[in-house]
Length: 178
Image 1 (cartoon, rainbow, N blue to C red):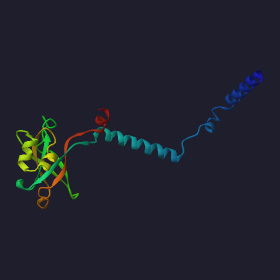
Image 2 (image 1 turned 180 degrees about the vertical axis):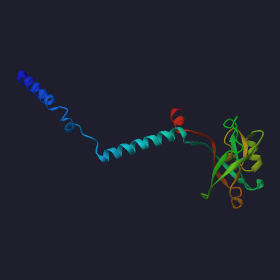
Image 3 (image 1 turned 90 degrees about the horizontal axis):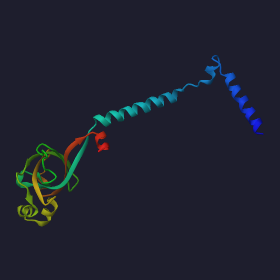
Image 4 (image 1 turned 60 degrees about the horizontal axis):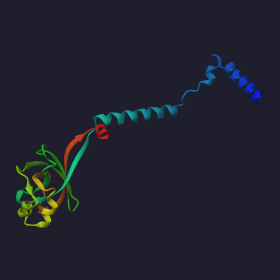
């Protein structure tokens, strides 16, 4: 039985070798059809676009804290950021995005930073309100930052809001490799 199988395999191989001649080669070569070529071109274009975006695109890094619409400072946003998080960081001119309690969203820029950090107790003394101080203090010692909003917030006086500071921009590749 094994002997017959070996002979049959040898005949099959000889048959294949005998049929493949230069004249019949076109018969055995199968080219890619139109839809396959289009799919490959689209897949290559998408892969190339993702690769380019990965090296040239920008992702924003955020720091989110709570702030207050301060009527004593011309309705600017006042927030207190942990001194350790902002150590050595250039905060003046930093972009900010805020969301008020009623869902109103807007943008602004940081225009001032206090020269010395304040403790939670000092923040409580400023506002005479323990609830506000507990929400505003983001650390043991905090720098006071003032954000000038692009819109008028006079009707939202002394209202708490969420403020997201854009601290840095990184490329997607460096984000994935970090």
